[in-house]
Length: 376
Image 1 (tube, rainbow, N blue to C red):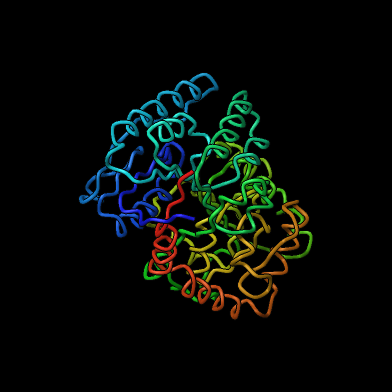
Image 2 (image 1 turned 90 degrees about the vertical axis):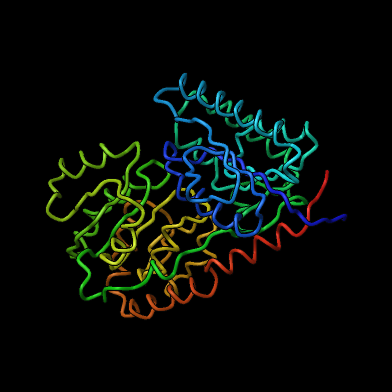
């Protein structure tokens, strides 16, 4: 297989404030900018001041409040990206489409300009489509199908995702490279368990795929088991009002504290307020909150979806629940809180992050991926 060093990288992504993906994009750009001084980024909401040495071409993108505006905004965003791909063809060796399995127009533009296009998949779009009943689902499925078939490479965080995301047919062009890392000087254990105010917490986007409503429905089952807990919920999203209404209607304001969306720089302190962090998702890639919680010595109770089982091993570095039914969540919470191994698991969780998810480890993995290119 012919190989060559990739020296000029183009990055396309629609992650930004509107999609609550700005932190994910910022991290990948930080990583890539240390590898490629010629990095060219086309994305919303990136501040050139944060990356003064690379080329950033901002685009305008808002998700939209209904199907018609969502479609129109997607079309405008993809047309902007396509023009950028064509105009920048002489500046790039390869285009990386981050979370780009619906970016059909930029994909076509890259292939027309004879540039390799690699998909870096950030989540399971197919599962998310099933959970979100949207008239645009059929278009998103078609876009995903075309992008997966057109891509030169498909980059996944873990080999576990090949089966779970039904990608076996693309095996020959799949590369496994985890680009996740944690700032282990910021995400660090500060408070011992005895001083942490909340027994369990949820930090993340309040959307159907995260299983937040199942978590709330699990609380009566937890209390039936004789466990009195104090809960913290942090995040924003489409289910925010439903979360607030559920807490009020079930008169749980005294034991469930809702803080809404907070700046990312406050997350290390928040994770140090919890004894356990819960993530009862239906689908995931590799959620940052799992890695950040573990770095803070906060064990995670989670469903075995996406790449999570690569890092969360039951009763070793965290706790795995069989599914996200309210009953299973309640049992998982109870098992974790009464576990005599909680302190040991906390230590092992942080060790796992220090061993595998530092910036230097992620940089090494990405350099290895970009050390060759496949033209097809």
